[in-house]
Length: 330
Image (cartoon, rainbow, N blue to C red; front, top):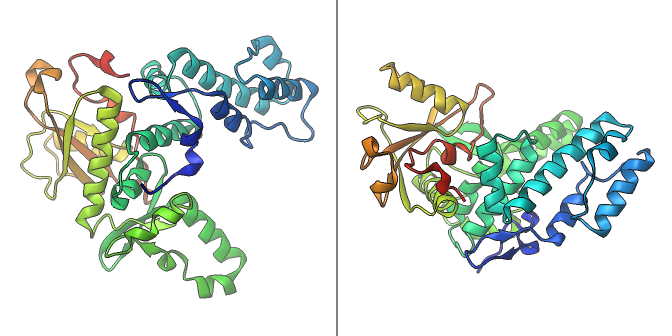
């Protein structure tokens, strides 16, 4: 089986009998090595002592008074975030249950932490998948994408990579002249899928989201797997090519713009031209839905932000579903 997303830390976890990831000391130690957590050279003695104690025992308690004694306010905030994340996951028992708890409780955590959890969950749920289009499309759920129009088609490239290329163009025009910027990146599809696996952690492949139906099918499958893994309910998600004449009894915005588009459609207004994706979700067992919606489709709407970026909010796929028993998230 091809390996992918090694940087997620999936190999540092173990699975329970239900196939969910246990929170291991190895994973916590890897997070403690993140640059946001490692104390800088000028860190106070309290911060260095806390980090050293957790490196010896990553489950050790850290009282609030000890965090409050840290001299750097940014350090205090970072440690509060990390320890909230750690304690929530340990109390829940698994990464999946911890993520669901964070979303349901509305805990305030940095996006980088939430994206890390989503990548871990998707890496577990998609284990064994050999379709590079599905894996690459799944990156939309934890890595923002920058849009690029070429030959009338919407292409999506990793935003962090694009920002690095843009910075290089400003600092080294000569290098930029030969590199070609975004246009020099490989577009997935047409026989290039095999190249994805060796560079999945580099995020250097472009998704032909507007021109290749396989890209949109890939995102549909990734979302379906995510929902099934997190809720235990089997769903089918299919990409749509038309937004008119749909039975919009229930919709989920996959991002802020998608939610705004859905609200416009709900009011009978013309949909915005910033819609870049429309998907139909059907539950295999309609009885798990709210009774007045049982058997009706759920529409998933993806939009393009004003900054030309696509930022999927996977938590919306959990909190926005019309489930009769929302506590089924686990």
